[in-house]
Length: 57
Image (cartoon, rainbow, N blue to C red; front, side, top):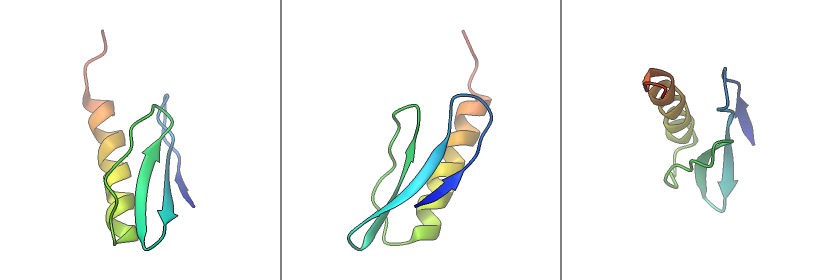
């Protein structure tokens, strides 16, 4: 399992399931299963970046 820290309520991890890796976040978001671990980590980073740019209400 690979963990990435982030500010706020988003703490992402990547986990392996068989020959696939997927990214998950503490907010409940889950990325698609990827054969590339690097791509799963990029999905997690993109998720955190996208939520940081989102306006708060």
